[in-house]
Image (cartoon, rainbow, N blue to C red; front, side, top):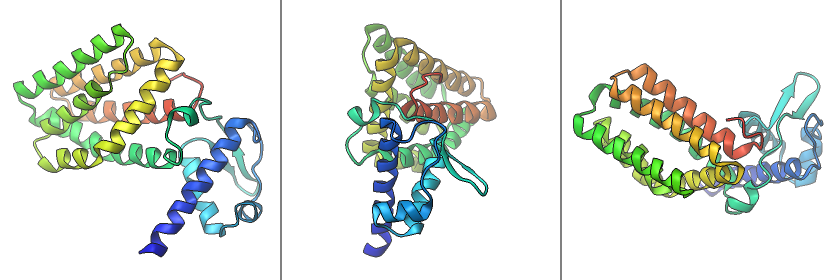
Length: 234
């Protein structure tokens, strides 16, 4: 078991090291990264570890691979990310977003089919609390978490809620990081997040499972993008 866990931790370390180098400008946008062999030598790890780290960076939109040419920097990560996110936690935050994307998208679809009037009330209350937080210039982390938990409850499958409870420390870190970064950019960023929440809520209220699923997927993908990139477009 230890041998299975250790490579993942090494890949996380390499992932974050490269991320920092891109953020600092050591590798600028459009620059070609060293080869897998060169990176393995620099970090003193095996090439499979390098491949895993690069695969995650590609999945996160930070680097792009060009066949026969290598890996190139596509986007520069948010400069404030390393100030806000706990050291060594960024790879874990990204994996949490990936898991939430699969879990919560289906929960939203089921909620659109199975929700009760009481469920809609709970979802609406969390949404309203988020509105108040935005108007006051507050983060609204607790209200954001409760909004997503209310949707998991509305899915009427206790495993969705149980999974969210188990993940709650990771989800809380991700939401806190995303909302702090958004608030640093502009209040409008949090307003865009709220519009995404509104779309999810509308589709659930209108019993539109496909719309709810798509809206949740878009929201979580955009959340991941907002954490990683400094463009602020999403």
